[in-house]
Image 1: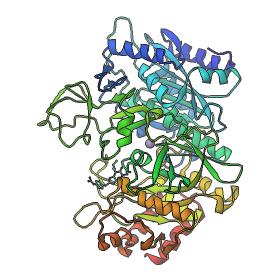
Image 2 (image 1 turned 120 degrees about the vertical axis):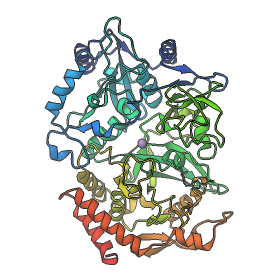
Image 3 (image 1 turned 135 degrees about the vertical axis):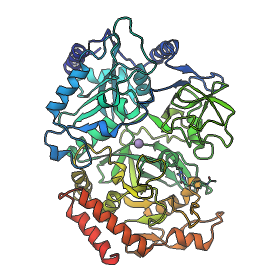
Image 4 (image 1 turned 45 degrees about the horizontal axis):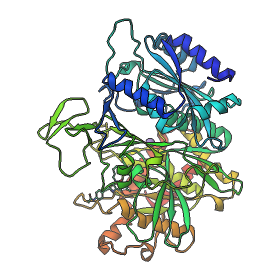
Length: 596
Ligand code: TSX
Ligand code: MN
């Protein structure tokens, strides 16, 4: 409890609307988490995993209708429709609130209303922002405890009068007298609402208990609401990893990187370099808050305190550090269960277990046609579990950024690495980011590029063109030479046979080395119409057996592909409307002089 009047009013008004059985204030302690988990195990909502293999680890299975973020049920309810822009769903805030109030009314009947005070960012840092999430999901409480700084320390800040973002959440499944509670209660898809009121700095989420729909500190607060606040206040809230790179001489630089989904962002953030003497340590794997420091450079902090990572594809080969993170005190959601009481997912091991219980709780064997783990199954683990966490990940001033990486999954067209010629050109590269649509993409346009500017398409809490303008405005806020260098990287080019041209994973350190040395002006570049590429002698290929032909393909700039690309960017830019910054149109026009 707290004496903060705004907090008290929020909790009291919520309770009147939601009509829970009882109200519980979370203190964030281990005792509290243990008791909540015990209750969930007794109700069969959580499965205790084999404690000698995975101490402190539990498995949850969600309802099959509640397995991922729901972008078509996500709303940016700005007062003026124009402010939400072409990439967001918009409803007038008054109308959306009226609709949602009907759903929220009595939605916690028969349940406990949990009050979660949390901080995004280290307690006491000028970066940090407080939220209070009200929820009826103990699963959400347990996940928020890992993903944020939660409980008592935050209540103390609120007692001292700190402001906060109210985050109202209900799974949307009231329990009437004598009614049976499903294992994963939630509302049907058409009743799910993930709503943001940016001008009011308010989040209302109804009907889903899964991931980004329900852990409101993450995408809703730290990206959608924070991006809006960041524009007002002159900073950036980005969908980026943050890494600390140390060279063999012990010199340190920090890089951030934005990648669309399925590009291995978490893998890169924990990568083990293949080249001797180089070290990569993690500051964050998903979100970066970036501000101009007193010296005019950009400083980044990770507002989160945990990883909510995709399980399938995570293995000792792809991400050995993540495998160590999830050895203990981890919540697994929608992965498969082995006969030993351990977890399994596609891509974990070369051989498939003979028998499993799949993510829906059914028997599964090698003849089964379905996947054992859901493709969007997750692990929730504390950053403290990570063997490669940087010692200064909680620095209250953040870490100074030397380079920003923009990535994408492109089988052709985009070279292994490309340096921007200016900040404006770098923003252009961010704005045209995209990934090829694969069989895993829920779309029938396999082979086409899905544009995902700055990997922020689903997370910009306002008009995408205003967002581009905000990025461009940084040259007015600080000296351009103090801003990070901007790179586009592409680990995913393929040869004519469909084989990956670049070995990726730990070998990506060779690209990081080149960027590192570019930041120190130790190496030069070759200018091309699309930007600057490495001088072949400067990319460290020691111990890597790659033919001259393959190497040339990795940096080949094919005019036919670029003609197609320029047309595609042109069409994409048109879809963003008339407020697209002139500077970006000019960047495209310059490219068009080479490729038409
Ligand atoms: O995460 C990936 N990274 C970044 C790692 C630091 N993945 C996995 C993407 C899906 C989430 C990659 N996949 C990367 C990569 O750099 N590159 C590729 C393509 C690739 C896949 C397999 C191999 C080589 C390249 N080789 C073998 O499997 C032996
Ligand atoms: Mn993400």
